[in-house]
Amino acid sequence: MKISAVDPITAEILGNAFLSITEQMGASLIRSAYSTNIKERRDCSCALFSADGSLIALAEHIPIHLGSMQGLVTQISQDQSTWNLKNGDILIANDPYLGGGSHLPDMTLIKPFFYRGRLSAFLANIAHWADIGGRSPGAGTAGGSTEIYQEGLRIPSVKLYKNNSIQKDLLTFLLSNMRCPEERMGDLRAQVASLQLGERQLTELFERYNQTTLNASVQENLDYSERLLRNALKSIPEGIYCFQDWMDDDGIHSKPLVIKVKISVSHGNKPKIEFDFLGTAQQTEGGINMVWAALLATVSYALKAVVGPNIPLNSGFQRPIRILAPLGCLVNAQEPAAVGGRTDTCQRVVDTIFGALAQAVPEKITAASNGATTALIFGGTKSLTGQDFVYVESLGGGMGASSKKDGMDGIQVHITNTSNLPVESMELEYPLRVLHYGLVPDSGGPGRRRGGLAIRKEIMALKPMRFSAHSDRHKIPPWGFQGGYPGSKGHFLLERHNRTKKYLRSKVVDIVIHKNDILKIQTAGGGGYGPPEKREPEKVVNDLHRGRISCNRAKKIYKVIWKKNGLPDPETLTSLRSSPSKE
Image 1 (cartoon, rainbow, N blue to C red):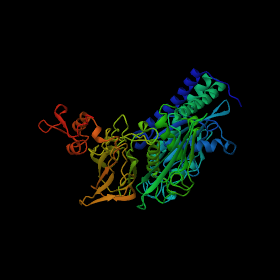
Image 2 (cartoon, rainbow, N blue to C red):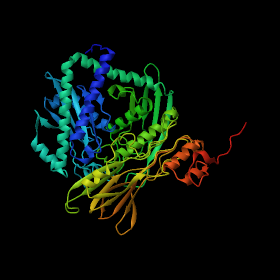
Image 3 (cartoon, one colour):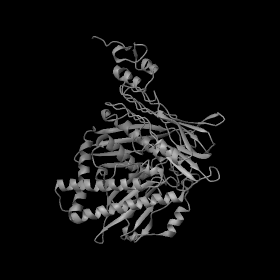
Image 4 (spheres, rainbow, N blue to C red):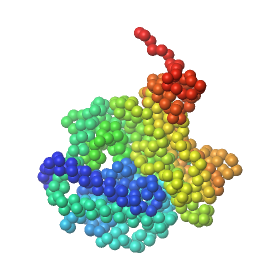
C-alpha cells in the first residue's frame, strides 16, 4: 500500500511527539517503581513501534534494552493471527531464546495499541527486575552460571493481561518463583501504568491527526534516518577494517576469549556497512554469552556513536547495516548458553568495533573504555540475614580519551546508562555501609588526552549475606590509542573480618559474605589518546591540583615538575621533555 507524502515540518513535529511519549513513559515508570534498581538507578527503557514491528522512537535510557524490546515486538508482529491481539492485552516476556530478550532480569511488557478497532502501534517498556529466581539471589544478573536454567525463570511471550484484566493464575505462578514478590509486583504495576500513560497520549495524537498523516510521518522519519546514515557512512573511507580484542575469561575457565570483527564499508548509490564477526570465540560455559538481539542493539549503538550521534535511532537507521555472526559463537549464542553477564561482552564488542573504525576515522574514535559493566549483587535470605532482599548496582569507570577530550571519570559507558546509586539510599534500605567511594588517581591511561578515572568503592556487610558479580578488564587493561597508555585494570578484593584478604574472580556467584567483611571494588580506567609527552604542561598541573594524577606520574610519564615549596604551580613548572629541534 502506497503511503501519501507528508510535509517535512509535520513529520518533524510528529517524530518529536513520538519520542516525547516514550520519554514521558520512562519518567512515569521511574517515579512509580518500587525497587531501588529502577526508582534510583533508572535501569529501564521505553519505546514505540509501528504495527508491523518497526521501531519508531526509543527514549534515551539504556541502549542494550533496544534488542530485548525489538526482538519481542518483531516476533509478535510477524505472527499476529496466532496471537489474536485485542484491545486491553499486555504481553510479558524475558526469555532470550523464546521471548526476544537479552537476559532474564530484563522484563519486557508489550501493549498493542488499537485506534478505532485497528491495530496501529505497539507500546513497550523494559525494567530490570532485581531477582527473577534462579540458583541464588540476583543470579540472572551474575556472570558465573553455566546454563540459562540456573539464572532464573524463563518466560516466553505470553498474555499477562486480557481485556484490561490481569491473569491471576499466571501472575501467581510468576511471583511464586521469584524472591521479594511484593517488590516484583510493585515494579510490574509501574510498568503497566507506564504503558497506560503512553496509550492515553498516543490516543490524543491520533485524535489530533488523521491516521494517514501519522502513518506517512512514521515512514518519512524512518526514511529520513536511513538517508542520514547512508550519507554519514560516506565520511568513512571505503574499505575493509579488522580488529580483535579479548575478554579476560568466562568466569569458569581462565582462558581469554577473542572477539573479532571485519567491517566493510561501501559507498556507491546506497552506502552500506557490514559487520562480520567470523573468528570470534565459540559460545562459552560461563554466563557472558550474547544473543542476536543484544548484538543488533550493540552494533547499532556503536555505529551511531561514531558517525551519527544526532541521527534518530529507529528501524530506518538499521537498514544500511548488515551483521554476520556464526550461530553458536560468543556474540550469537544458542540455547542453553548462560547470558546473565552479557553486558561485559557487549562492551567489548563496542571496543572492538571502535578499534576497527579507528583505522579509517581515528579522529572520531575513543580509546578503550573501562569496558565492562561492573555489576554487584548483594542478596539476603531469611535463614542467613534474617530478611530477603536483593540489591543490584553497576559501577561506572573510566571512559577512553578521544583526539579532542580527556575521557570522562567514573561514568557508565556505551551500552549501559544507569545512574549512580546514592549512598544514603543503599544504607537506608540494605544492611550495608559504604566506607569509601571515590575516583582512583592514576587509573586513567596517560596520553595527550588522559583516559577517564576508575571508581573505588568499599562496602562493609552489617549482616551475613551472599555476593555475586560480573565484570571484566581485571586481566587485560583497556587499550590506549595513537601512543596513549592503557587504563588501569579493575579488581574485587574481599577483606574478611579476621583481616584475611582474597582477590575474587571477575565473575562470581553466591559467595558468602560474613558480618563486618569488607568488599573493595575497583573498576577499570579508560585508555589514553596520543603520546603523554605531548600533553600541555598546564593540564598536567591541573590534574595534580585536582588529584587526578600523582606527582610521580607527572614526573616520570608526563615529564613535568614544578618549583614552589614542592606544590604544583603553573607559573613555575619545568618541563623535562627534550627541547624541539630548531631544524
